[in-house]
Image 1 (cartoon, one colour):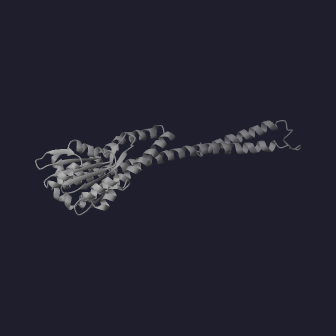
Image 2 (tube, rainbow, N blue to C red):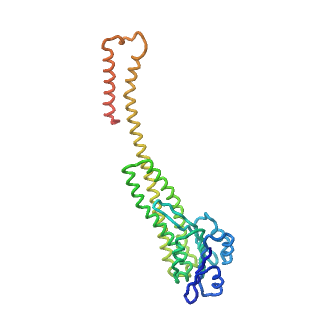
Image 3 (cartoon, rainbow, N blue to C red):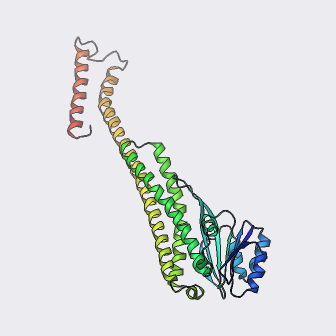
Length: 321
């Protein structure tokens, strides 16, 4: 689906399709936003090339798993990042790759799926933003990163509950939950790290096309970088917390196992000499001196009891019990 927003010289915004592209070309004072959503690959490529997009930029925009990046060409800037379509408190985030081509009088957005940030800007277009396509692109990415921030902050309450549960009643189910969250955070960290690099490149190596459109673009880029950095740092912190909780659980399990093994070892150590005595007098020989002694049984039992009590006292003094 191809949609367009055309801002004419009189400040009027017109919604339509590809038919408005020719109108924009004829009006040198107009501004155009082309949104391409889930369009046929060949048709999409043909339209982008017709708009003057670089073939390499088109190739990057159409790759499904291309990492976020920014690249400057002669007449446009490409911003490639991953938007967010949905998320929940379990940190299940649905992403969609988004490519933004910012030119002097035109913004082209390409995405194979629903984009919350583009829908937000599209539903209530700002005249001033349409006149500054690069700033509009930064605003779209800024809104997307904000949704990521909401998702991560929503997870903050959950990680606090997991910390409390780990201290009160650690169990295998909690361990599986932490491992699942750590895996999700690892994937999000990779995305956030890319986004932070993109924002950092735009901030410190601002393309001339972007700098010319708005003198205040630096503030917008700084705000975008700060938000990307915060999301990345929060995801890294929660990732480390999950890792610490997992290691803590493993340490507790290992400590419990060590205590159990120590008790079993002490019990074994107590009964080994008793078994030895019982084994000697249980041998089937006719000539055992104590076998027919009248008090032999009581002496043997007393000896075994004395040995058991003595070993028990020794282990308690050694604090093995």
